[in-house]
Image 1 (cartoon, one colour):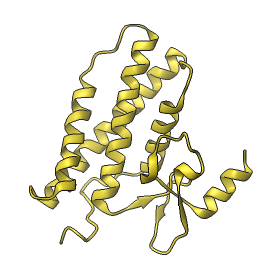
Image 2 (cartoon, helix red, strand yellow):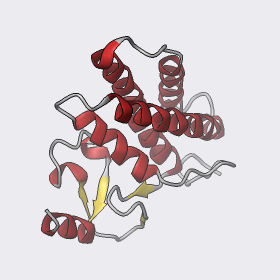
Image 3 (cartoon, one colour):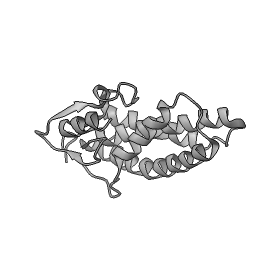
Image 4 (tube, helix red, strand yellow):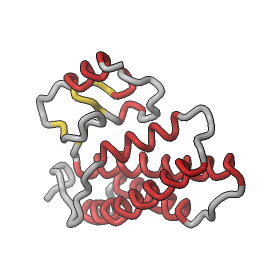
Length: 165
């Protein structure tokens, strides 16, 4: 396959949209969540990263050493590994800061996974976005989502999200 064709690793990831949404939700918190909630998110983000890292590495290997997006993705994997080795921080504020770094790595690796597979996932319904689907950037729905312009949402999902608030 060429670098322009979508490629799927041996360990396809499901729930990319959910991973990204959970990370964005955690990063959006303006007050400190309770310690138990922070611990649960730490477990989820650790599991997400352990699922994402080998797949991103496989996808990058399929692209080759001269592919810039693949090399950038590998840097993201390295940073995620470093963050996973950080010990639990003392105090709630320190632990929230550590888990936020994990959340940023989850969001980063989700973006790299999508970019390397050429697969786009709706962050609202967690279904793939096909060619020709009407989409809007996620930040037009939720400007504080932290997902930036890399996250997309089906136009129909966006309309439902606006009415459900």
